[in-house]
Length: 79
Image (cartoon, rainbow, N blue to C red):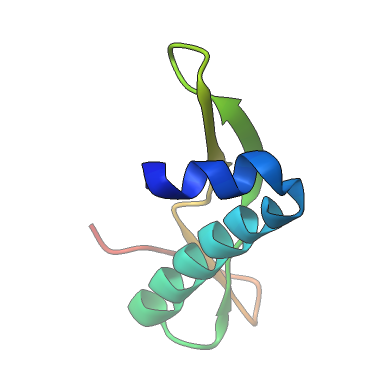
């Protein structure tokens, strides 16, 4: 939300919480869809500017379309 941008702008130590929020959201979604015996992943990158080059911290991510079971098999997320 816009109201939180000032906190991130003046206290950059808060930025890792964006990574944590993105990871926890994705991981919880995958575990809810596929069960607790799977492992997923994420590549995340912090971007700090919006389209108009104003300060707008946000995370861009690459995530797999599913998760890996303990036996190594890949399980896709349901449509």
